[in-house]
Image 1 (cartoon, rainbow over the protein chains, first blue to last red):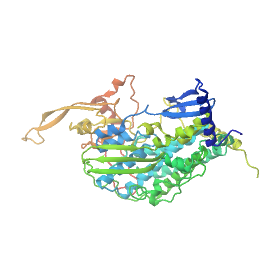
Image 2: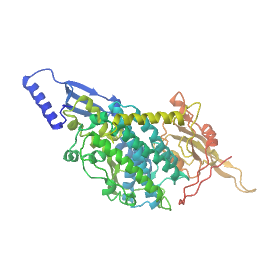
Image 3: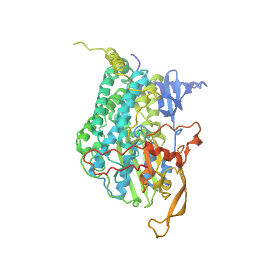
Image 4: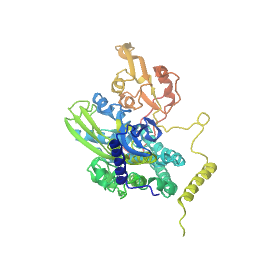
Amino acid sequence: MTAVNDREQLAYIASQAADARVNLELEAEGMTLNIGPQHPATHGTLRIVLELDGEQVIKADPVMGYMHRGYEKLVEVRTYPQVTTLINRIDWLSGFANEVPFILAAEKLMEIEAPERAKHIRTLLFEMSRIANVTLFLGDMAVQLGAVSPVFYAFRDREYVLNQIEAVTGGRFHPNFDRIGGLKDDLPAGWIEDTKVAIQKIYDFCDEMEDLLVGNEIFQARTRGIGIIPADVALSYGLSGANARASGIDWDLRRDSDVGQGGGLAYDKVDFKVWTHPDGDSFARYWVRLQETREACSIVEQLLDTIPSGPIMAKVPRIIKVAEGEAYVATENPLGEMGYYVISQGGLEPFRVKIRSASFSNMSITPWLLQGTYVPDVITILASLYFILGDIDR
Amino acid sequence: MPKVPGLIKGLSVTFGEIVKTVTKGADTVQYPHVKEVPVPRARGVIALHEENCTSCMLCSRECPDWCIYIEGHKTLAPPRRAGGKPRSVNKLDRFDIDYGLCMYCGICVEVCPFEALFWTPEFEYSEPKIADLLHDKERLGEWMETVPEFEPYEGGSEAKVKKVPRP
């Protein structure tokens, strides 16, 4: 373990090596290694061009856009109710969480407030989609390190939550359930009891992952001290979500924004802790997400017990025309801060929608982060940053 | 108490899972032989109740990728009461849904003002060619049999449970 863990020192050595080569005017540059576009470690199509000096990365250059689907443009020719079907597919592991900020932005422009019951169920499904998303990461991270069994447990236990989402929305991945002014439908009978059983299984899964991976010596050796992001760098690159919290930044939009605290989502009704970790390495990012999954389970349990009765839909005109204006609403999605900047000109369709997706900012740090690391650690770092390619390219 | 090495602890988890799978059975099923029953709300395929359709084109217009094709014409139906005027009704000539394009969002079912469209959890309609996924109104009508009854709602709800029209 004499390998230098300090990232800055490694970067310095790498830059010295690069300078030395330039000085000697050697024609042989470092080897170029393409990771992707089709690579199992990238959950989609991301290409990373690495310049290597032996095993060490001199320069990393992410190439994005292989999965660009042009959603920002497509939503300009679709009415507001139609938009939610498209934006389901941005971060495909947590479809419902993508709809919420857009709907909230439209509600803000129309000055409509959803009824309490709708807000409550919305928060409930939001947290369940977070569990469905992060559960997969908890197993997937191990696969990138070469341990195969955790991902099977992750896929199996995620299915319990997806079944519950399907039971109420009708779709496992693309719920399309959120509407301007409320929700499409109410909960079916018996759903609350079934969900409590499913949530217990996720608690068990978290304990299993803790025994299987967090205490494991190999896992710790592969992740501790790898890919350290200091808090100031994380802030300057615009990291959000669990990646920022793993660097010690105590920032969570569920707690720190008006939207989370009653203005659209009902996080003011529940007690929860925002987990942070001071280290900022790959292990910290895994640990923070593990704790967050447990926290999400506890939020879901608290919400299940306190669903208020009442209608689920506010009074909304049958043909939805959004008033002229601009609104930006961001929520704490499973991957980080996701926001929609909606410009309306009073018509049936939005004039322009800018999507601020978390993965795009989270992965923009990779050139800085990968510099000076070793090739086997590249996959660890990419996996621990946890981006969904649909969320990067949109 | 000496600390248990993480490797041993992890192996015990894996072993526990093997025992659980062998004794309690796996969570997966062998698909063609054993079928999982989807939940009643599952969006499998859209069924058409032809008598209710007035070819008003609302579903076709609201579809996000415009995959519903409707054609119709007006005809005269016999009067309801003896001696009355003949009524003018819309007759549906063509109602096709292209499932190669459909995004399964359910907007058409939601906007239908006459309750002619229903979701069914039926999912076994794959085709070798994508062009064969264009289903006409006869095929969509056959799926009406598989539409499940709407579930009752959870306590505290004010929504009304709808009824499925049966022939």
